[in-house]
Length: 275
Figure 1 (cartoon, one colour):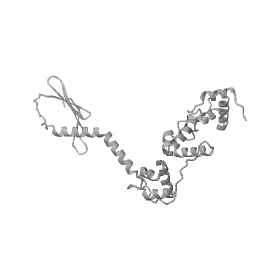
Figure 2 (cartoon, helix red, strand yellow):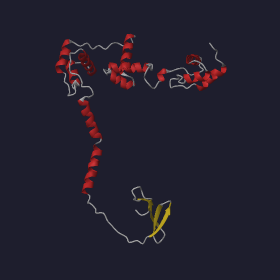
Figure 3 (tube, one colour):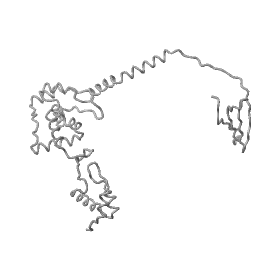
Figure 4 (cartoon, one colour):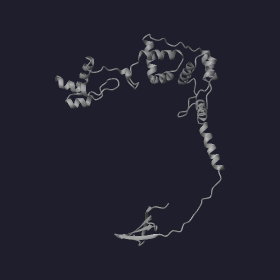
């Protein structure tokens, strides 16, 4: 294996492009410049980071949560929210991670005895009460989770999870219609938007009413008698007429192009002074 020279090492350190995690992003460019393999450059970067010549990699600083290591603070927040009965979706939104990542992390913490499984054993009577009382909206979404939680004595999130499992096992056959949304949530959002933009609608209605009540004004038409001086210039078959006032002020310019194949002239006004 070819030994690294001091010049090569200095070039690598100087030109290494670091991500927010201190990972080197331009390994291929450096390898091409130094006529080395990418793996050779990667190994050298590892050694330089180990020896402190390059900043050490800190994946917990990654902006993207994909493969970002979990911190102790995130673990504590996950467990606290989980113990409060919040869903993995709610936890994922709070921690800016995916639901799968949160679920896998919770399972790992339980496996490593850093968390206890949630005790949420459903009795046959509770399951029967849930199935008998579950109600769906027109799109197949459950819209009485609060009532089911009260009737079964379970937490809101536990009822949500149980409904999902009962659907998977076929004990609840009503499924949400694909491509639709919860009607209750949609109505709540509509009410929110109506309240939020009510002042805009009121202003539009007020402006329209004001416009309709305003008296219609007739356009005023006036005419003027002007003395105009016309000068005509013909260059290369193109006739240019210029219109002047006696004071010398230019009013307009009109050009007539040579006759077309059908014998008619094409006329165009290229400059107009008076509107």
